[in-house]
Image (tube, rainbow, N blue to C red):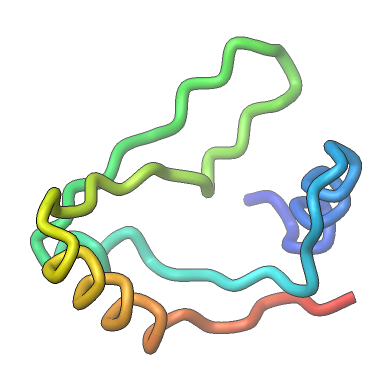
Length: 80
């Protein structure tokens, strides 16, 4: 398992902004009918097994409802 502090450091080293790391179980997406899958990384050393992509519904209203439900279950795991 990759520590949240490491994930945060990696993210900002790529020039991206971040104020905290939040976590959500993949099972939370499955429970809402949103399939998820592992993110393939081609560069060695960049793998993050805790990172997954989620297939959101094409309908914007349904996607917004899913995002709201998932956001309510996200837990802050790291704040610099």
